[in-house]
Length: 189
Image (cartoon, one colour):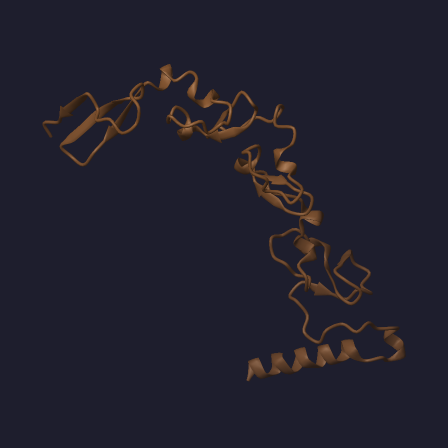
């Protein structure tokens, strides 16, 4: 019974929005169903105009929930990018895609000014100023495009790899890929 009363009240209020009584002043062709945060564009409170006929409360702008019919209240132009994102002209890309030699922004803005860009901690800065994932350093492939990721591999010379017990081995990265490791160590566990 209470639910029926709530529904009838909601329908009555929506019908009042569409009426053209002189005491309410001019109205717009607002949709009959309003979003949770949608407010009257004639409101005296602070509003964000979505389009000609719909507005939302300013407090609902950039809250992570699109309230405007077209989501304009959550757009990159309105809200910007997250801290871990790079702003393109009309979108955002993950910061790890910045200076990776691939155009991720529509205008390739993510590949500009790489000389002064600091790569994320998970990436290696190449001599040509591009960034590659750190696990691609000293893998016998020129991932940078200038071979700088393969130049000083002395600190990466030996890496330990584990196999299912009871065997593990040391891999000498000075050897070309595909050769068996020189030393196999049996574990007593």
